[in-house]
Length: 240
Image (cartoon, rainbow, N blue to C red; front, side):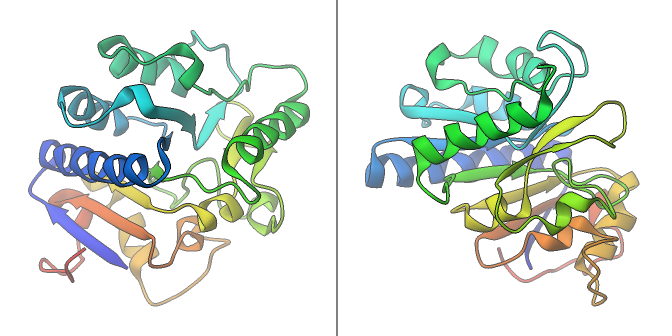
């Protein structure tokens, strides 16, 4: 795995924002627009703050999506959209039409998943190729809303699925299929509470059912860790 270790969470956020800005420049030069998927959880707040400070990212030609969302109203404190609005959108002039949130609060979550997949395929092709996807990692080695031993891990065709059994609330999530065809995927992981999960995902024992983040692999995938999250990993990993 392509892995880089930064000194702390702040440095990790700055590096992540830099990689995102570079990907945006490449996509906008090649195809006219940049299609970015955001992650949920706590870590993205710092990344969003770093993104908002950059002056080399053309938000007017950027479309924003999500890797997952909880089945809560968009103004809920548990909403990934609400977190991104507070930490990123409120600091930018992002056109509302360029923000494509997962409508996971809808009563029919399966229909919401199909509609989001239709949106992705209509805008990005079949299969839909996102330019850049931010992902995090849970202490149980889940990523997006792909949890250990969940049936959605076996999904080979669909790019968006509903997850009925998940912590806090049911959810919508991108599948491993969607993450496999993205142009770039960047895991941003900070904190000592993630060290064991990072070591497991990077270890030699491959078990996607137990460690779902192992299912996101390939030359398009990179990892950014702070020293706490790196834990027992080599202090001088191969260059990303």
